[in-house]
Length: 408
Image 1: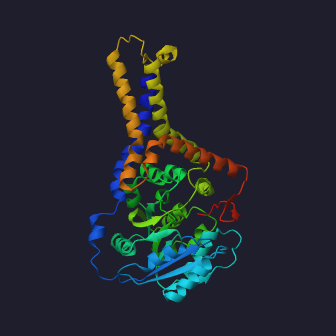
Image 2: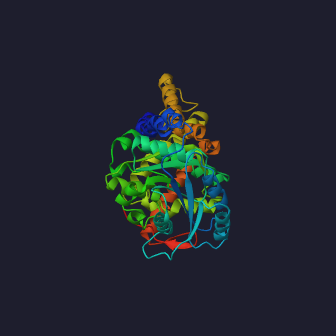
Image 3: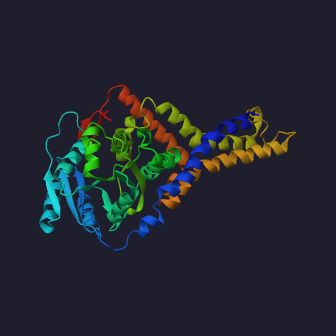
């Protein structure tokens, strides 16, 4: 039967991310040992919170004030203004007059071959007072215990670079649909147990919204200069550390920080496109990942819809697909029923990771209900990015037109 054959082909494609997500979600979340280690005593290491900012007037004050409210840790908050034109510099200068822990820096002219964010982060590392540094995006708002919890975890585990995924706040339809794809791809296809057992660059993963490291390790990894042309620091910075033989890790920060990356559909699409070719949309990965994602998340819904259509309306098309039609007197009704149950099971399994993510990471259920559409649009954007790269089309972001880099 064609129905059965298609279902059997889809089983491993659907089961892989479902099973891996179920295992990874527990490893990804902070454990009791992370929380119980917070005993109210101050950290020995002070932390420089380093914030690259380009046209971030809408959120920079909330970002800075949240970092200043960190408990049990001495902090300085250094903001590098990267050519803002919206008054970001005025806000930070005002904050610096109110609290001497705030440091305002004016970024230098962007050199050839550098990405703006990576150059700003490199400059920030040069002026940071403390050896422990937290690189955070300007739209991230830390909880008061975030730096303490993550710093203690880094000390306990011995990793050289620790990243976290803040709670991703979403407001518009396309944000709710596409932003949670980060968790789906990460936890559905990266074996976290192997990632933590190996320093292989192939297991590099992180979130560019937050990185915690010490200066010695940062220097050993080559600093942000090692990824100077990249827009995808979430992958490229951990890879630089691992290439240098250093361990990295990434954890859930749902209860440690909040971040709203984009505010409308145009920003979401540009955000996905801007660094896609340094990830899934690379020539090496785009075809296999398209097959994996379509097979895991789109095909089960299409198969279920086709099977229901065949049962409800019958006709030659339904019969040709194996006897599943309302007016076909099947000699094996039990087999038809079993195939139907299998197809429904594949559909349920295909949306399980997204449903679990909605519960655990407080994501919108819009993305769960429309998960197949989200994946289809996500794949389409990857192919658009790949085609743009092939044609040499440069991607604009924050008023700059840069060709995605190839460093490390």
